[in-house]
Amino acid sequence: MINVGIIGVGTVGTSVVKVLEKNRDIISARAGKEIQVVKGVVRNLEKKRNIDIPLTTDPFEVTDDPNIDIVVELMGGVEEAYEVVQRALKNKKAVVTANKALLAYHRYELQQLAGDIPFEFEASVAGGIPIIKALREGLSANHIDAIRGIMNGTCNYILTKMANEGAEFSAILKEAQELGYAEADPTFDIEGYDAAHKLLILASIAYGIDAKPEDILIEGITKINTLDFEFANEFGYSIKLLTIAKKRGNEVELRVHPTLVPNEQMIAKVDGVMNGVSVIGDVVGETMYYGPGAGGDATASAVVSNIIDIARGGKCSPMLGFKRPLESGMELASKDSILSNYYLRLLVEDRPGILAKIASIFGEYNISIESMLQKPGPDRLAHLLLSTHQCQESEIHKALNEIKQQAFLKEEPAMIRIEV
Image 1: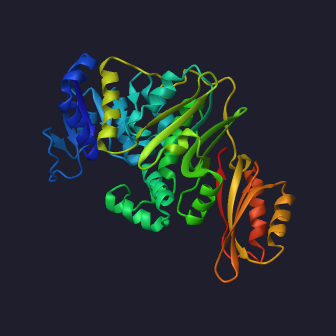
Image 2 (image 1 turned 90 degrees about the vertical axis):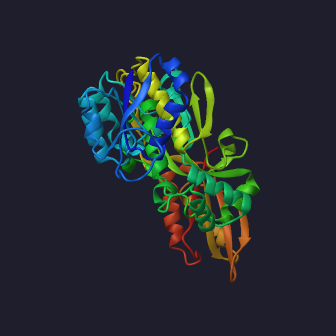
């Protein structure tokens, strides 16, 4: 018998309990042992949860209980969760977590503390999609050349609706909140932080990179408007919030931002609240993983799969997939050194010579314009929608800073990177 304690019996924790009960026969057959939840931790004992397990408000009643074999951490947050998980590992208990924020900041410390103690975290990235197992095991023969992921369903839902209906961001965000796809305070999702935490976890497994959210480029989707979708439609792109890891020699670019993606690419076809992750290996080529990235049942599916792995006696040590450091010593590329094509939206005076002046400024920084679309604006103004050939991040920012000083510019420029 495997005894499980769940710290955080909310939406996901409740689903875990129900899945273990509903699918008890097949789970015990696959695990080779019976699995039961013997205790749960909640913040409010008065709230009804429609599950029949003993509850407490003290997480240490789970971490310190000698009868509990596996601690499932679903409480969220960073430092309090870190303290709780450390306590469980020090008590030699296997741990399963879905906490991406915890791992974004403390994954290497937890790996060192865990040692040979099973520590699993499939549900921390892309919900029900088994991307951790794919990277850590299925693709372990490959150098990973690139990872591109749509790993936030809230943003993907909003961008899909904007593309299909021509509606503005604020209207779709409100609709997403009413449908439960977005939180009352959606900042963590729409500003890209949720996706960034997931990217950092995948980057550790793929490249052995120890980076924190503050170290990488993170941009959200709040500045995107309907004109950007008109340009995308005209030139055959979709707009997605992408998590990107890309290897360049001994360096790895890590970034999260809205991205123009050619419609023919597989990742461009991931719509609505669904998640998708494309991984390019040097041996296998491109593989694609698609499915629900959030929600109680999808996340519970991943949590329970980790519990089954541990019950079977499985150990994945170290938890991030490297027994020793890479000889090549992969390093994080600086934000300024990122190479990309760029799309720019500029509101300018509608008079002769403006485009020539903009092209001249770009030329000073060795940036060439690839395509251009002009849309009428208010009161003798025009929207210029431009795309560039590949250039360095630092150069496009220098050019934009110079354009911002020009009297013909009438609002802050908007920029979206293009992944080709």
